[in-house]
Image 1: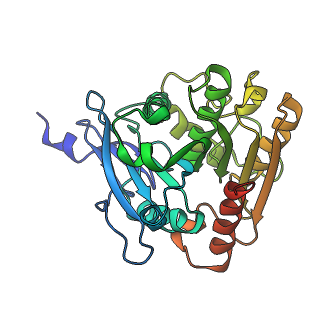
Image 2: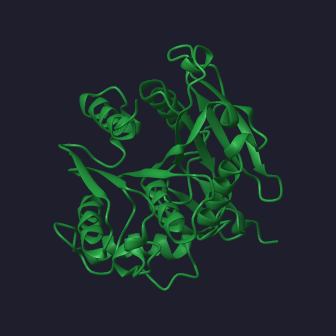
Image 3: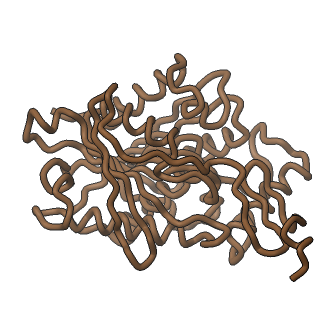
Length: 320
């Protein structure tokens, strides 16, 4: 074998990954992981579960300390991590810390899904894995299923999906699939899309019109989803999806950031829902002066705290 192939780069997608000519993949970011724990700061306890031994799909589950004091069932949050479908995991420090804080603040049970990532497992595998995780969650209704935390503490009449960036994209598609196919025993109250990863061929709003920059976004999408019809594929551009109005929840919260290149896609999504026949309530929150996933980079800044409180309020609306 030509040893030069082990050092020559075939494809480079900063800040995500590099692929060498020998086929080796080097992820540049989002590679660190931390174990589940009993968090000393929040009292939130977490554990990892295998959902499908065949595919390796798994999840990290979180319960607040209130479950030790009360038998009351709590809202259930299913979270999908971001990372362009190709980096980060449910076990990354930033997601582990964020879910600890969120579960404590909202007093919810959470399931953070570990789906398989591109390019080894191209989109739509992330959607298939996420749906498999949701079916596993739904298997716990009526006191059934293998996990005691879900059986004892989760209220399946009050379920929410959430995610950031590519995870928000997944949360959208899972909400759509619930609307189209149903998820037995589960009532999806709402979805929360934080800085959702949507795109399209034609620039909208104040989006960058630079052909080279837009080309890089499209190239990454095509690499993570080789079978795509293009950057106007409904997977990445909900504006081309005739089934958009079928979203299976009553409420949607879209969170965007002023300096995020995806900001206009968030606003556009809210407009699309209004035109699609969707009968639920759509809310938009914009963080001024902030960029993409700022809340994961600096969780204690004023805007991050405000974002967390807004999402918590959205989930706890109507809770007794």
